[in-house]
Image 1 (spheres, rainbow, N blue to C red):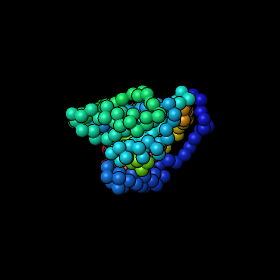
Image 2: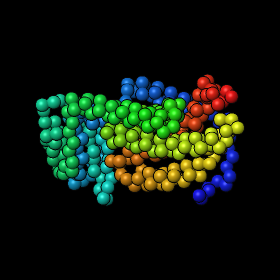
Image 3: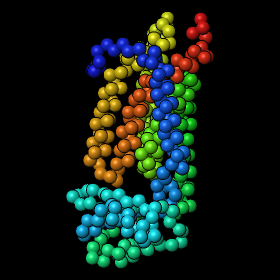
Image 4: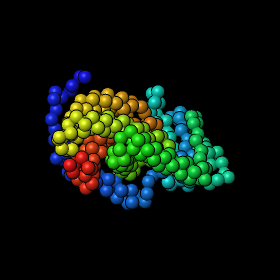
Length: 304
């Protein structure tokens, strides 16, 4: 196999406590940001509301549209510029629309009256009722919990129970860090971001299982060495593969982030952070947990 680093021999486990403290600090900052902001910034997918993309004949900037919507009685409206195809369109999001009313028509009529000399075209309309939003939020949470549950079963069957717990902690670590990043930046949590979280879980798990598989081989092959040496050797053995996989994935995600447009900008950002954090956690979170587990609950072979 092609080796980016020839015969690596890094002592990753000697830095595991430092890595734990760094991860804990980042997660804590994200959780504090979430509390300060009063919880996650849910999109209309989860709280209900409308999203309209408009194309004006003469371009209207975000500040002007926000001011206009505030005057029309929508002070909490979110306005974003959508750039694509050489045009600058406006995306308007109004949270918590009232059920039983056609809020889309109401907003369009008000904007038509306000911008009499600047006609516009409605490119797309999305509308979600508050009740459906709550159901989608519950379904998204269940999807994440179910995926973690089946991961525990699979890894326990393929490896050991302690490997499954280490993998789950690493996955929760990855999701919490990306979640915290979105709270710090006050970005919206939508169904697309939940899909990004599940993608991150799959990517990180794949990387972790590769390392775990090599650990299982080295535990048998290096039975007279300590577990720390076995795990360090396993990570070094798979290091070139990890770097290659992460680098090629990052190239695609970075291109998507830069050129994908504002509509999928947040989705690409979640993937970008997830790939970086997932690579880090397979080395500095999942594997070190096995070392700590063995220190607290050594197996029979370790005692012998």
